Amino acid sequence: MHRRPGLSARLKPTLSYAGFLLLASALLLAVVWVFLLRYVLDNSQGLLGVSPNRYLLLHTFAPAAAVALACLLVFGLLGGWILAGRMLAPLTQIRDAARMAGNGALSHRIRMKGRQDEFRELSDAFDSMLGQLESHVAEQQRFAANASHELRTPLAISRTLLDVARRDPTRDRGELIERLHVVNTRAIDLTEALLLLGRGDRGSFTRESVDLSLMAEEAAEALLSLAERRRITLDVTGGAARTSGSAELLLRMVTHLVQNAIVHNLPVGGTVTVHTEAYAGASVLRIENTGPRLPPELVATLTEPFRRGTDRVRTDEHAGVGLGLAIVDSVVRAHGGTLHLASRPEGGLLATVRLPGTP
Image (cartoon, rainbow, N blue to C red; front, side, top):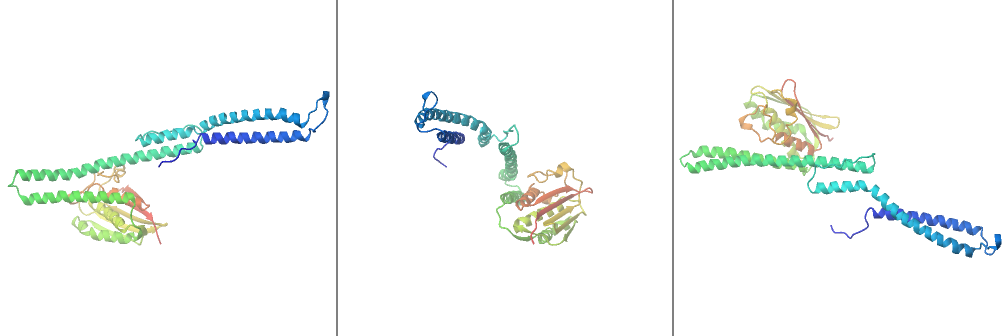
Protein backbone atom coordinates (compact mmCIF):
# COMPACT_ATOMS: atom_id res chain seq x y z
CA MET A 1 0.00 0.00 0.00
CA HIS A 2 1.42 3.40 -1.03
CA ARG A 3 1.68 5.95 1.78
CA ARG A 4 3.04 9.48 1.94
CA PRO A 5 6.54 9.73 3.47
CA GLY A 6 6.63 10.83 7.09
CA LEU A 7 9.04 11.29 9.95
CA SER A 8 11.24 8.34 10.79
CA ALA A 9 10.91 6.48 14.07
CA ARG A 10 14.32 7.84 15.11
CA LEU A 11 13.51 11.46 14.24
CA LYS A 12 10.24 11.50 16.16
CA PRO A 13 11.77 10.78 19.60
CA THR A 14 14.66 13.12 18.74
CA LEU A 15 12.31 16.04 18.14
CA SER A 16 10.26 15.09 21.17
CA TYR A 17 13.34 14.96 23.39
CA ALA A 18 14.69 18.28 22.06
CA GLY A 19 11.29 19.95 22.32
CA PHE A 20 10.83 18.77 25.89
CA LEU A 21 14.33 19.96 26.84
CA LEU A 22 13.72 23.35 25.20
CA LEU A 23 10.38 23.79 26.94
CA ALA A 24 11.84 22.86 30.33
CA SER A 25 14.71 25.31 29.81
CA ALA A 26 12.33 28.10 28.78
CA LEU A 27 10.23 27.53 31.88
CA LEU A 28 13.34 27.59 34.05
CA LEU A 29 14.52 30.85 32.52
CA ALA A 30 11.04 32.31 32.89
CA VAL A 31 11.04 31.45 36.59
CA VAL A 32 14.47 33.02 37.03
CA TRP A 33 13.34 36.12 35.13
CA VAL A 34 10.22 36.56 37.24
CA PHE A 35 12.23 35.97 40.41
CA LEU A 36 14.77 38.64 39.47
CA LEU A 37 12.10 41.20 38.57
CA ARG A 38 10.62 40.94 42.05
CA TYR A 39 13.82 42.33 43.57
CA VAL A 40 14.84 44.90 40.97
CA LEU A 41 13.33 48.39 41.04
CA ASP A 42 12.61 50.56 38.07
CA ASN A 43 15.01 53.34 39.17
CA SER A 44 17.39 52.75 42.06
CA GLN A 45 20.96 53.79 42.82
CA GLY A 46 23.11 50.89 43.67
CA LEU A 47 26.73 50.43 44.50
CA LEU A 48 29.16 52.84 42.74
CA GLY A 49 26.25 54.70 41.30
CA VAL A 50 25.18 51.87 39.04
CA SER A 51 21.45 51.58 38.62
CA PRO A 52 20.38 47.87 38.21
CA ASN A 53 16.98 48.74 36.80
CA ARG A 54 14.73 46.51 34.76
CA TYR A 55 15.74 48.07 31.45
CA LEU A 56 19.41 47.27 32.04
CA LEU A 57 18.56 43.76 33.27
CA LEU A 58 16.45 43.09 30.19
CA HIS A 59 19.23 44.04 27.78
CA THR A 60 21.87 41.97 29.60
CA PHE A 61 19.86 38.88 30.58
CA ALA A 62 17.72 38.36 27.48
CA PRO A 63 20.58 37.84 24.94
CA ALA A 64 22.33 35.42 27.28
CA ALA A 65 19.07 33.52 27.79
CA ALA A 66 18.53 33.31 24.01
CA VAL A 67 22.04 31.93 23.47
CA ALA A 68 21.49 29.41 26.26
CA LEU A 69 18.21 28.26 24.69
CA ALA A 70 19.86 27.89 21.28
CA CYS A 71 22.67 25.81 22.78
CA LEU A 72 20.16 23.67 24.64
CA LEU A 73 18.20 23.13 21.40
CA VAL A 74 21.31 21.98 19.55
CA PHE A 75 22.32 19.80 22.49
CA GLY A 76 18.81 18.33 22.70
CA LEU A 77 18.69 17.50 18.99
CA LEU A 78 22.16 15.93 19.00
CA GLY A 79 21.65 14.07 22.26
CA GLY A 80 18.16 12.96 21.28
CA TRP A 81 19.42 11.64 17.92
CA ILE A 82 22.17 9.62 19.59
CA LEU A 83 19.94 8.31 22.37
CA ALA A 84 17.15 7.42 19.95
CA GLY A 85 19.63 5.57 17.75
CA ARG A 86 20.90 3.52 20.67
CA MET A 87 17.40 2.79 21.90
CA LEU A 88 16.13 1.77 18.45
CA ALA A 89 19.19 -0.30 17.50
CA PRO A 90 17.39 -3.58 18.38
CA LEU A 91 14.64 -2.69 15.92
CA THR A 92 17.29 -2.48 13.21
CA GLN A 93 18.32 -6.06 13.93
CA ILE A 94 14.71 -7.21 13.85
CA ARG A 95 14.13 -5.30 10.57
CA ASP A 96 17.17 -6.92 8.96
CA ALA A 97 16.03 -10.35 10.12
CA ALA A 98 12.55 -9.72 8.74
CA ARG A 99 13.99 -8.73 5.35
CA MET A 100 16.16 -11.85 5.27
CA ALA A 101 13.11 -13.98 6.16
CA GLY A 102 11.16 -12.28 3.37
CA ASN A 103 13.92 -13.30 0.95
CA GLY A 104 13.65 -16.91 2.07
CA ALA A 105 16.42 -17.11 4.70
CA LEU A 106 14.32 -18.63 7.48
CA SER A 107 17.33 -20.20 9.21
CA HIS A 108 18.64 -16.79 10.39
CA ARG A 109 18.09 -15.94 14.07
CA ILE A 110 18.53 -12.60 15.85
CA ARG A 111 19.63 -14.00 19.23
CA MET A 112 19.68 -10.54 20.79
CA LYS A 113 22.01 -10.17 23.75
CA GLY A 114 21.52 -8.09 26.87
CA ARG A 115 19.03 -7.94 29.69
CA GLN A 116 15.39 -8.84 29.39
CA ASP A 117 13.26 -5.92 28.13
CA GLU A 118 10.52 -5.25 25.59
CA PHE A 119 12.92 -5.40 22.63
CA ARG A 120 14.45 -8.65 23.90
CA GLU A 121 10.98 -10.17 24.26
CA LEU A 122 10.09 -9.05 20.74
CA SER A 123 13.32 -10.51 19.42
CA ASP A 124 12.77 -13.85 21.15
CA ALA A 125 9.19 -13.99 19.86
CA PHE A 126 10.44 -13.24 16.34
CA ASP A 127 13.07 -15.99 16.59
CA SER A 128 10.42 -18.41 17.79
CA MET A 129 8.17 -17.46 14.88
CA LEU A 130 11.02 -17.98 12.42
CA GLY A 131 11.68 -21.40 13.90
CA GLN A 132 8.06 -22.42 13.51
CA LEU A 133 7.94 -21.05 9.97
CA GLU A 134 11.11 -22.89 9.02
CA SER A 135 9.75 -26.12 10.45
CA HIS A 136 6.38 -25.63 8.75
CA VAL A 137 7.94 -24.80 5.36
CA ALA A 138 10.27 -27.80 5.59
CA GLU A 139 7.33 -30.01 6.47
CA GLN A 140 5.29 -28.66 3.57
CA GLN A 141 8.18 -29.15 1.16
CA ARG A 142 8.69 -32.70 2.37
CA PHE A 143 4.96 -33.35 2.12
CA ALA A 144 4.79 -31.93 -1.41
CA ALA A 145 7.73 -34.06 -2.50
CA ASN A 146 6.20 -37.19 -0.98
CA ALA A 147 2.76 -36.42 -2.41
CA SER A 148 4.16 -35.88 -5.91
CA HIS A 149 6.08 -39.15 -5.63
CA GLU A 150 3.01 -41.04 -4.41
CA LEU A 151 0.85 -39.61 -7.17
CA ARG A 152 3.47 -40.21 -9.85
CA THR A 153 3.77 -43.90 -8.98
CA PRO A 154 0.24 -45.04 -9.97
CA LEU A 155 0.33 -42.83 -13.07
CA ALA A 156 3.62 -44.37 -14.13
CA ILE A 157 2.23 -47.86 -13.55
CA SER A 158 -0.84 -47.04 -15.65
CA ARG A 159 1.31 -45.77 -18.48
CA THR A 160 3.48 -48.88 -18.34
CA LEU A 161 0.45 -51.16 -18.49
CA LEU A 162 -0.96 -49.25 -21.45
CA ASP A 163 2.39 -49.38 -23.27
CA VAL A 164 2.60 -53.13 -22.72
CA ALA A 165 -0.98 -53.60 -23.98
CA ARG A 166 -0.23 -51.50 -27.07
CA ARG A 167 2.87 -53.51 -27.93
CA ASP A 168 1.15 -56.83 -27.25
CA PRO A 169 -2.41 -56.79 -28.68
CA THR A 170 -2.89 -60.46 -27.75
CA ARG A 171 -2.55 -59.77 -24.03
CA ASP A 172 -5.55 -60.58 -21.83
CA ARG A 173 -7.61 -57.40 -21.65
CA GLY A 174 -9.47 -58.54 -18.53
CA GLU A 175 -6.25 -58.72 -16.53
CA LEU A 176 -5.17 -55.33 -17.87
CA ILE A 177 -8.47 -53.71 -16.96
CA GLU A 178 -8.37 -55.21 -13.47
CA ARG A 179 -4.85 -53.95 -12.81
CA LEU A 180 -5.70 -50.51 -14.18
CA HIS A 181 -8.76 -50.43 -11.94
CA VAL A 182 -6.65 -51.19 -8.86
CA VAL A 183 -4.04 -48.58 -9.76
CA ASN A 184 -6.61 -45.87 -10.49
CA THR A 185 -8.51 -46.67 -7.31
CA ARG A 186 -5.33 -46.15 -5.32
CA ALA A 187 -4.69 -42.83 -7.08
CA ILE A 188 -8.24 -41.67 -6.35
CA ASP A 189 -7.93 -42.70 -2.70
CA LEU A 190 -4.67 -40.81 -2.39
CA THR A 191 -6.17 -37.67 -4.00
CA GLU A 192 -9.19 -37.77 -1.69
CA ALA A 193 -6.90 -38.24 1.31
CA LEU A 194 -4.83 -35.21 0.28
CA LEU A 195 -7.97 -33.10 -0.10
CA LEU A 196 -9.25 -34.25 3.28
CA LEU A 197 -5.90 -33.47 4.88
CA GLY A 198 -6.01 -29.97 3.37
CA ARG A 199 -9.53 -29.38 4.73
CA GLY A 200 -8.41 -30.40 8.19
CA ASP A 201 -5.34 -28.16 8.10
CA ARG A 202 -7.37 -25.12 7.00
CA GLY A 203 -10.12 -25.70 9.55
CA SER A 204 -12.71 -24.43 7.05
CA PHE A 205 -15.85 -26.27 8.09
CA THR A 206 -19.22 -25.62 9.67
CA ARG A 207 -19.50 -26.63 13.32
CA GLU A 208 -22.39 -28.57 14.77
CA SER A 209 -23.04 -30.70 17.83
CA VAL A 210 -21.56 -34.19 17.36
CA ASP A 211 -21.67 -37.28 19.59
CA LEU A 212 -18.46 -39.31 19.31
CA SER A 213 -20.23 -42.44 20.59
CA LEU A 214 -22.56 -42.38 17.57
CA MET A 215 -19.56 -41.82 15.30
CA ALA A 216 -17.82 -44.83 16.85
CA GLU A 217 -20.87 -47.06 16.33
CA GLU A 218 -21.24 -45.93 12.71
CA ALA A 219 -17.56 -46.51 11.95
CA ALA A 220 -17.63 -49.94 13.64
CA GLU A 221 -20.69 -50.96 11.65
CA ALA A 222 -19.06 -49.89 8.38
CA LEU A 223 -15.86 -51.84 9.15
CA LEU A 224 -17.50 -54.88 10.75
CA SER A 225 -17.15 -56.99 7.60
CA LEU A 226 -13.41 -56.24 7.46
CA ALA A 227 -13.03 -57.26 11.11
CA GLU A 228 -14.99 -60.47 10.56
CA ARG A 229 -12.84 -61.46 7.58
CA ARG A 230 -9.76 -61.11 9.76
CA ARG A 231 -11.53 -62.81 12.72
CA ILE A 232 -11.01 -59.73 14.88
CA THR A 233 -13.37 -58.90 17.72
CA LEU A 234 -14.62 -55.33 17.49
CA ASP A 235 -16.18 -53.85 20.64
CA VAL A 236 -17.69 -50.39 21.14
CA THR A 237 -18.17 -49.33 24.76
CA GLY A 238 -18.74 -46.19 26.82
CA GLY A 239 -21.30 -43.42 26.79
CA ALA A 240 -22.12 -40.17 25.08
CA ALA A 241 -19.24 -37.80 24.35
CA ARG A 242 -20.48 -34.64 22.69
CA THR A 243 -18.28 -32.09 21.00
CA SER A 244 -18.62 -29.33 18.42
CA GLY A 245 -17.25 -29.71 14.92
CA SER A 246 -17.70 -31.15 11.47
CA ALA A 247 -19.65 -34.40 11.52
CA GLU A 248 -18.05 -35.50 8.24
CA LEU A 249 -14.47 -34.85 9.34
CA LEU A 250 -14.98 -36.41 12.78
CA LEU A 251 -16.53 -39.51 11.21
CA ARG A 252 -13.53 -39.80 8.89
CA MET A 253 -11.26 -39.40 11.89
CA VAL A 254 -12.96 -42.19 13.86
CA THR A 255 -13.15 -44.42 10.78
CA HIS A 256 -9.42 -44.02 10.08
CA LEU A 257 -8.57 -44.91 13.67
CA VAL A 258 -10.81 -47.99 13.72
CA GLN A 259 -9.59 -49.17 10.31
CA ASN A 260 -6.00 -48.58 11.39
CA ALA A 261 -6.62 -50.68 14.52
CA ILE A 262 -8.10 -53.51 12.44
CA VAL A 263 -5.50 -53.55 9.67
CA HIS A 264 -2.48 -53.27 11.97
CA ASN A 265 -3.48 -56.12 14.24
CA LEU A 266 -2.70 -59.76 14.80
CA PRO A 267 -2.91 -61.88 11.64
CA VAL A 268 -5.94 -63.72 13.06
CA GLY A 269 -7.98 -63.45 16.24
CA GLY A 270 -7.06 -60.00 17.50
CA THR A 271 -9.27 -57.48 19.28
CA VAL A 272 -10.17 -53.82 18.81
CA THR A 273 -11.83 -51.84 21.60
CA VAL A 274 -13.45 -48.45 20.99
CA HIS A 275 -14.41 -46.49 24.10
CA THR A 276 -16.02 -43.05 24.40
CA GLU A 277 -16.66 -40.96 27.50
CA ALA A 278 -17.06 -37.40 28.73
CA TYR A 279 -14.46 -36.56 31.35
CA ALA A 280 -13.41 -33.27 32.98
CA GLY A 281 -15.06 -31.09 30.35
CA ALA A 282 -13.58 -33.06 27.46
CA SER A 283 -14.91 -35.71 25.10
CA VAL A 284 -12.54 -38.66 25.02
CA LEU A 285 -12.23 -41.37 22.36
CA ARG A 286 -9.90 -44.31 23.05
CA ILE A 287 -9.13 -47.01 20.51
CA GLU A 288 -6.74 -49.84 21.34
CA ASN A 289 -5.85 -52.96 19.46
CA THR A 290 -3.73 -56.03 19.83
CA GLY A 291 -0.76 -56.60 17.60
CA PRO A 292 3.02 -56.63 17.56
CA ARG A 293 5.01 -54.49 19.96
CA LEU A 294 5.88 -51.08 18.56
CA PRO A 295 9.12 -49.29 19.44
CA PRO A 296 8.63 -45.73 20.80
CA GLU A 297 10.68 -44.20 17.97
CA LEU A 298 8.28 -45.74 15.46
CA VAL A 299 5.16 -44.53 17.31
CA ALA A 300 6.52 -40.96 17.34
CA THR A 301 6.53 -40.87 13.51
CA LEU A 302 3.14 -42.45 12.78
CA THR A 303 1.31 -39.11 12.37
CA GLU A 304 3.76 -37.83 9.76
CA PRO A 305 2.45 -37.94 6.17
CA PHE A 306 3.58 -40.93 4.11
CA ARG A 307 5.43 -42.45 7.07
CA ARG A 308 4.52 -46.13 7.11
CA GLY A 309 5.77 -48.28 9.94
CA THR A 310 7.74 -51.07 8.32
CA ASP A 311 7.33 -53.27 11.38
CA ARG A 312 3.55 -53.05 11.32
CA VAL A 313 1.39 -55.81 9.89
CA ARG A 314 -0.81 -54.75 6.97
CA THR A 315 -2.96 -56.59 4.50
CA ASP A 316 -2.88 -56.37 0.74
CA GLU A 317 -6.52 -55.32 0.52
CA HIS A 318 -5.94 -52.29 2.75
CA ALA A 319 -2.39 -51.23 2.00
CA GLY A 320 -3.28 -47.61 2.68
CA VAL A 321 -1.75 -44.46 1.27
CA GLY A 322 0.27 -43.41 4.32
CA LEU A 323 -2.03 -40.56 5.32
CA GLY A 324 -4.49 -42.18 7.74
CA LEU A 325 -3.00 -41.04 11.05
CA ALA A 326 -1.82 -37.77 9.47
CA ILE A 327 -5.45 -37.02 8.59
CA VAL A 328 -6.54 -38.00 12.10
CA ASP A 329 -3.98 -35.66 13.67
CA SER A 330 -4.96 -32.83 11.31
CA VAL A 331 -8.69 -33.21 12.05
CA VAL A 332 -8.09 -33.38 15.80
CA ARG A 333 -5.94 -30.23 15.79
CA ALA A 334 -8.49 -28.39 13.63
CA HIS A 335 -11.11 -29.13 16.32
CA GLY A 336 -8.88 -27.86 19.13
CA GLY A 337 -8.10 -31.32 20.49
CA THR A 338 -5.10 -33.56 21.05
CA LEU A 339 -4.09 -36.98 19.74
CA HIS A 340 -1.87 -39.23 21.84
CA LEU A 341 -0.42 -42.48 20.51
CA ALA A 342 1.22 -45.00 22.83
CA SER A 343 2.42 -48.55 22.36
CA ARG A 344 0.79 -51.13 24.63
CA PRO A 345 3.19 -53.20 26.77
CA GLU A 346 1.52 -56.42 25.61
CA GLY A 347 1.60 -55.30 21.96
CA GLY A 348 -0.53 -53.08 19.76
CA LEU A 349 -1.37 -49.40 19.88
CA LEU A 350 -3.50 -47.15 22.10
CA ALA A 351 -4.85 -44.00 20.45
CA THR A 352 -6.46 -41.38 22.69
CA VAL A 353 -8.33 -38.39 21.25
CA ARG A 354 -9.40 -35.51 23.51
CA LEU A 355 -11.76 -32.89 22.11
CA PRO A 356 -13.45 -29.94 23.85
CA GLY A 357 -16.71 -31.19 25.30
CA THR A 358 -20.13 -29.58 25.03
CA PRO A 359 -23.20 -30.09 27.24
